[in-house]
Amino acid sequence: MSMSWLTSPLSIVIIVSLVIGLLMVVLFGYTSDQKAIGIAKDQLKAHLLAVRLYRDQIPVVMGSYGKILRGTGRYLKLAFKPLLYVIIPITLLMVQIDRYLGQTPLPENTPFLLTVHMTANDAMNDVTLELPPEITMTAPPVHIPASNDIVWRLVGSKEGKYEVKISSAGQTAEKAVCVGTDLPRISTIRLRGQFWERMFSSAEPALPENSPIESISINYPDRDIQVAGYGMNWIWLFFILSMVAGFIFKELLGIQI
Image 1 (cartoon, rainbow, N blue to C red):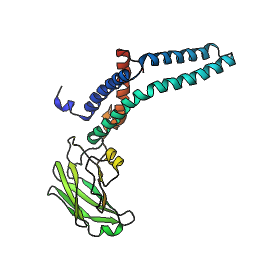
Image 2: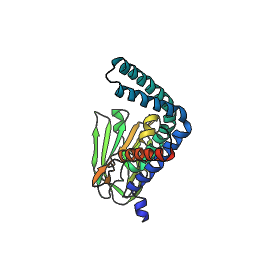
Image 3: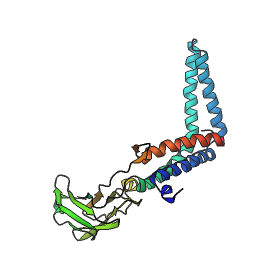
Image 4: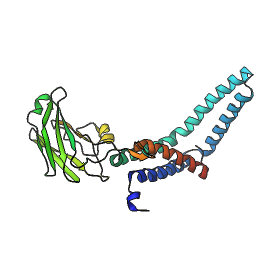
């Protein structure tokens, strides 16, 4: 097995899905009351069986439905805390993985757009852009007063990670630009403030609070992972594979979920 296959996006998703599937099951098993969950599930099965066996006896069926609702609530209560222990770290992990697998770097010699969003319309007049030698401007900037945006069309001529500098009102802000075919850590946008949005959508430090620049973004291409000839977002593939792996490990380890 070649190392290139091991570092391909598809193989990374498969390996991560298997590991996360196992960790989900083990973590759920250690943080849950396995005996109580087993009893709750057995009671639900018994009430469901009663509905099928006594479907001609309306009072029995209605009573069983009431017990099913109460049993479901009891089961959800038992499973809620362990699910929090599982979901929160996995969500944070997926955010980090998405930095590498969510988008592809910009292809060499292919135009892309750099958009700068300003705090006010009058701040758009003195904005300048400084580029490294490997990145060139292919058209004059376009000002969009309605949204306080300035858009540059650029192109990268060589694979690598570069910094472009945007200056306004005596302040300078940088934005990382990734060009090539590798698996770099990609940040599609750099933001000012907006802590929660930055946590989930940006991999760069916040812009200064007093900066007239509110955001700097690049239109990186979305990555599709090919599976049997079909392109698929890595998150969907991860969700499917990790769920399948979780059910398999659940049976192998005898853990109640």
